[in-house]
Amino acid sequence: MADTLTHPASENKEKLWNGGKSPFKVSYGKLMMWYFLLSDAFTFSGFLIAYGTLRASMPTWPVPDFVFSLFPGLAGPEWPLLFVTLMTFILLASSFTMVRAVQEGHQENKKGVVFWMILTIVGGIGFLSCQAWEWTTLIKKEHVSVTVNPFSAHTESGVYLEGDGHGIKEGDTFEAGDSYLIHKHDGEWHNLDYKVTDGPNAGQVKQQSFGPKAFGALFFFITGFHGFHVLTGVIFLIIICVNAATGLYVKRKNGYEMVEKIGLYWHFVDLVWVFVFLVFYLI
Amino acid sequence: MGHSYEKSVKTAYRIITILAVITICEVAFALIGKGYIIEGLHFPGWLIAGVMIIMSIVKAYLIIYEFMHMKYEVPGLVKTVLLPVGLLIWAVIAFFYEGTDWGDRRELIDNKNKEKIETRAKPMEQGMVKEVDIKNQ
Image 1 (cartoon, each protein chain N blue to C red):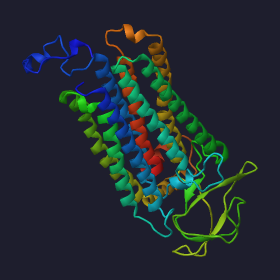
Image 2: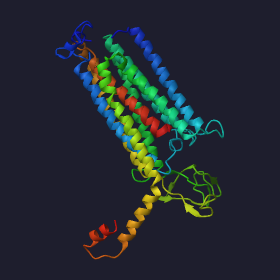
Image 3: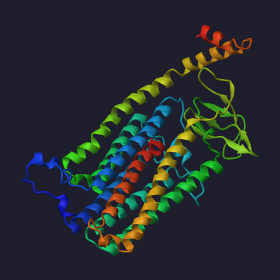
Image 4: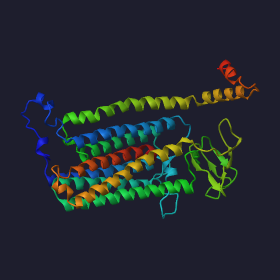
């Protein structure tokens, strides 16, 4: 830390705001990074509150452990939440390596900074790759789009009158709350017919309806916006890592403060993921 | 910064371990609560949501205070960053209340929408659309 940022505790508190020194004991850059992150937190909160409001207003919502139950290379769908837990761990691990890079920066250890930053970059790219696979599966395999959502859950018990060739057979029964995915056959949606077996509509023949439209738009937009933050973070991590490796920060008065600033941003991305993980996958 | 290098490295290892354990607990609780691990066991939705929200807030605290070093910043800085976040508490309550209300009135809204469609379906002369709409509202 530069000496200009510290001031003796005995100094008059009123003089703290008279200029010439930092009342918050941080540099301008770090303080502004905090305020940028605060405003970004409001942006994300706006999106997440919109998601929560729309979800609360729907009679059914796609059940996350049914929607996110595939794992690359493993036969499924029997791996609820496993893949997204892996993604969470990758991001958490990269947050830890970032902490280590900042600590090595305080020690003025160039090699240490570069080593831990490279690991952080690898983690960030790993997370983005996982997200790419997740999106591809949803779009290509399950045909979720911004306007069509084939994932939904039954609101009454019943029995299927036809099979879909994906695990549902004619005569299979289901209960209210059970999830389903409508498949596409030869480019055509194949909504299964079923007969309601209890409640006021018992005996009626109905067809599987599509799930709440907003699901696709909210999922792609919010996880996409977060992914965009991760991508931006990776780009800046690379730039700062190269700068550190070339010895630029050795010459600087404030040392490795750039590493601290990108560190704050990177932890924030991890922090947002805690809440995206909460509302999209856990609840 | 008032804390030695060795000590802060140790703290970092401790915090990442706690974060990992909480995450495992969250996923395990979600799966147990929905009957994936023990057959026939189901927790009510509010319990799952409540426990998850508390665990996520603990994770957020650890990330902000330990990883982002908020713990070592002066009180003034902490207040300017964290107090505005308090506004969100009301936003969350208000919007969830609103969303639940939309859900409860869905039938009413559907019926209202149908009424409008019926009125519009009446044959009308061009240019009269506006008038008829106003009358029926």
